[in-house]
Length: 412
Image (cartoon, rainbow, N blue to C red; front, side):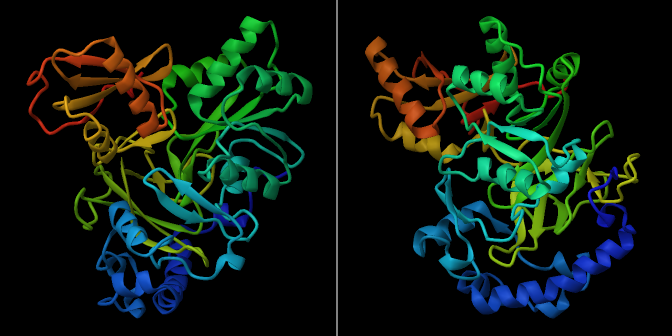
């Protein structure tokens, strides 16, 4: 069996670029014709000018805040979807809320290529621990694994002991899910005296795969790769097992721009990752992810010829991914507005025992444990993630505008 998913893995980079830009004008023209949101957003732009990256750079950036505002004004999709409900089958609601349609094509999120590069092959059984609830996370890899010819156990999140029982019975060779949850499964199985030695491969996303965690999985015989994905765009880039950098997926165009602008940076410079994806149902043109990355020079030693990026290098804004979920400064604002007694708040994110931990430091005087508990419950309601609360005196938090402080060390 080939080491490559298909011939496109090995195509000449210049030929790949020409093919992408040969398709782009028609994609954008159809979006403007069929989707009123795109018609308004691109009213001053001619699709025929999209002959290369220089032409693309003249088109406006679309940010998640713009998409959110449009969806609020014209629910559910803000006029950015091409087609009708019969054309997309599933609809998801991600934090924000932001609505996303799936599309009916096989492998609609373009993940089979990433799974193949991670070592998966037809006939493998996949334990999918991404969430199947509301957001598309679980379905992204579920659809991709089945398109590749794998069987999927839709584990979702939580019910850890039940998941361990399922793994022991089914003996899947593949784990897909967040990096942290695999460790939680392994540690809990050790406590229960259950072997999870069927796991040989893993593809993780939704959080940073710290070097120490990757080494720990390798020590247990689990070859672990990561992919970079968003609910809006699907799989954007992925690792080739044992090789450096992340390969940009087929059917997407990645740009690195100066944060806060649409201006491309010089190769190798860190900037905001902007993506154009080819989707008949949900085309996104110069969609700003808010994530930082950089283009790597040269080609992968695995032989694949796609552009390489360094992967996720932080956020261009304060929006932060914690335990696989984004937490936004706007959520902290909504939390503060629930409590008249609060001053400033600061959500601090760190790592403890290879797990993300968040602590809300909140300015409030004269409050008791009951107030702390009430605030802790509200924090979970707003973010959908558990965290602790620490009250501090009014006026004691730094006056620096920062409401989310990511203190995780991504080098270890």
